[in-house]
Length: 352
Ligand SMILES: Cc1ncc(COP(=O)(O)O)c(C=O)c1O
Image (cartoon, rainbow, N blue to C red; front, side):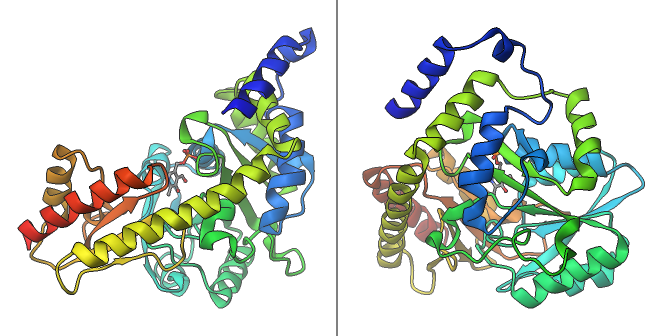
C-alpha cells in the first residue's frame, strides 16, 4: 500500500495537461506497456501493445467481450459451475448460455462441441476453473482451438488467477500456446483483483489484431477508459518491481493460508468430508452429501459471519452438480481463517 501510495502521489503531482485529456479507449499507454513487458510474459504470451486493452477488472473485460462479440441470435459456452457474473454478462446481450460440465481435466470440450457446435464464443478458464481449480488438459486445449478455427468462433480465455494458479507452477496460457497461428481466435482476459485487490478495478484484455477496432469501438461507446491516475500509478508500481516482489510474498502467504485451512478442516469436519484444492490457489471446495442443503447451510454460515458460496448456485441453469461449499481464503489473516474453519465445521456437523 505504501509503495502504491508513492506511485500514485508522484503521478498525481506530475500530471500534465496531455495526461488530463488522455482518452485512448484501450487505456493508458504506460500500463498497457507494463502489462506487455511484465505481466503476460509470465503466462507465456507475446503480443504487441496495440492489442492490449485496460479494463475494470476481469468482469469489465468479460463485459467488453460480450458486447463486442454477442447478440440475441448467438449462443455461448461457459463452465458449469462457473462465475455467476459471467452468465449475467452473456445474458444481458440476449445470447443464450450453455453450461458445460467440468471434470478433473477442466471443461468437457467434446461435450460442448457435441451439444453446441455453432456457439459464437466459448468462455473457458484453462488455468483454473472456478471453483474446482481444474486445469484444462493439453488435448482439450488443442480440440478447443481446432473447433474455434474450423467454426469461426472466438475463445475467451479467463485467466483470473494469473500466476497464482497452481501456486505459480501453472501451465502456460491458451494464448501462449502457439500452433501456427491457431490461437488467433483467442482473447485473453486477466485481472489485478487476485494479485492486488478487487476494488482496484483494473484488469486487461488481449485481443487478436482483427478485433482491435471492434473492441475499441465498443469501449469508446461505453466507459471509454479507466481513471488515468490509477492506471499510471499501477504502471509505475509494476515497472519499479513492486508487483513482482509482492507476488513472491503473496504466493507464499496463499500457500500457508491454504495449508492451514485444509489441516484445520481435516481435523474438525465429520469423517468422509474434506476440502479439495487440486490446483492450489486461493479457493477450496468441500463436497457435501446430498442430504445436506448447501444453500441453507451457506445462509446459516453467513449469519454466523462466515461468507461461503454454495455450489448449488453455479451458473447455467438448474442444479445438476453436487452439493458443496466454496471457500475463498485469499483475503484473510490466519487467525481469522482458523476461527472461520471452526465455525464452519461446527455448522456442518450440526447439519450432518
Ligand atoms: C472466479 C472469478 N472471480 C471473480 C471474478 C471477477 O473479477 P474482477 O474483480 O477482476 O472483475 C471473475 C471474473 O472473471 C472470476 O472468474
